[in-house]
Image (cartoon, rainbow, N blue to C red):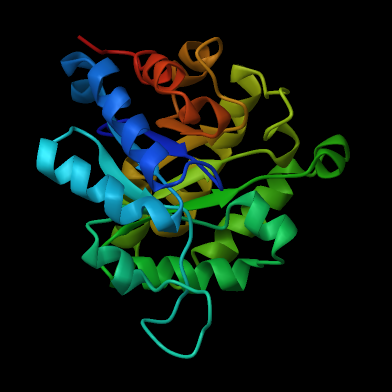
Length: 261
């Protein structure tokens, strides 16, 4: 399959950084990113909802080479859903990427594949790109069920989508046991699962979709392991958690992308 995929390095800030801190972080990050870094990879930051407008203003005013992302959304465009944020609201803020189905949402908030599917569809309908997360727990991995679990999650999360939609979105493989624990899949293990996911997309939605869908790895990615992970054939970027909160560390992860000039 032809390789036409530009890596995407995404910083998921989770429930960190108020809007003033977020402004400082994105400004510092822009100073540390080199032209070759952003030529080799797309870079997105995903602040908390309360900081989205502030970060958008800085990115737009200073024309920063950083894309704005969100961490979650509801699937409806409006309605009586107290505390929720709709995809259309995010789109109006210039959000380009929305994380759906993050393991913390699945594990802590009870989101299932059907819910993730509704959110992915809604993000696409609002002309944004979903980052669809899948990944197994430690118990599932030790039971040798990794491929079974990620196949079920991805199939359910993308159910009913067309081939061109699937080929243009982002899938993030993030083993639950490696998130925030300091543990990490080896580059070879991460590659094996990402190759399984790409094969699943190619088999169900066609070779073209399999060739163009971008697959990130997430799970304690940091400057020390990013280069080896990003060198793998079927890994097209990283969904970075803790290391993305620090501009120096996040810039170093971006600089680890192969092919930067």
